[in-house]
Image (cartoon, rainbow, N blue to C red):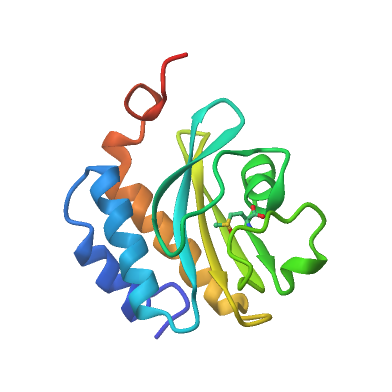
Length: 163
Ligand code: SME
């Protein structure tokens, strides 16, 4: 398989996301990742529904922290820098927000659409250093599939709360 060919999980996700409704796709995606990737205790989306704040979206796992400002935590770092955060030991990350005390490592991928941070996908594991570079590439590819499938419903007017 060439490095540009999506792997099996990514192709399965592509088939699963058969609506353009971001809410349905997000719910399906977190359930799919939690079921198919071993060693995870929490998988979920946080959405930027007001400026520089992440609000809890569809997830699988224990009830979680909400809201998260862009200035806080691993999720805030991913959103504010627009770069994936792959953290081997969350206890060593300054400002890490503890939601589920079992979490030891974390992967957070920003979800960017139309040059706007729509949100982040956050994945937690109770195993230290659970995520390697291949996991990161695979999850980033899955997020790209999510954005492509849901693009028609990701615009600000649909997902932002009026202030
Ligand atoms: N640990 C995250 C908070 C979200 S939970 O893990 C579900 C953080 O530091 O941003």
